[in-house]
Image (tube, rainbow, N blue to C red):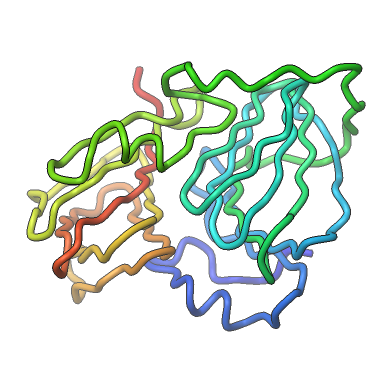
Length: 245
């Protein structure tokens, strides 16, 4: 059941969401509706029954957070996610999601605004290995650790992880003290998930605030903002924007 969480809040704090629910509970909170997506924070403790289903005409994807979850996408063998990983079910691929480890296995689902679970999945007749040798974007399983190992932690870097007809999503690693200039997006709403470190957002006409690991930040179209990595550690953020045409 999706609870009545505040929609499109400037910042939604991981600690506050988790604090609203008891350990081991199943729940969902819809946080965002940006015109392209409906984004829902979902908790499923280990043992939560799966609900295999298919979306025939759009990609659905998730950001893995607390705990560990097993994902079986299409005919691919199951994969187990860690914090910050991206998992994608391409259009027409059935997906079977099973929380495996942690008191609460948390995922942040990014789906179409008109999504439903009406078309049920059929178990595949055989499973094939997920190819770890492919490069981003739009992998079945994008491992954050692989990106960090490949790019390192001594420089700023960015990698595309999702690029389709609804979204262009990138992971950005930024060294402490780095900041952006003022930005504004006149035709799109944009949002972020902080997966490591602390980032300060300064939005025009508002007090600055610090987003911590796991927090979600939303800035509506036409609003100017800037960011800066705060503290002594680097940050990693996922930026979700409109597709690049």
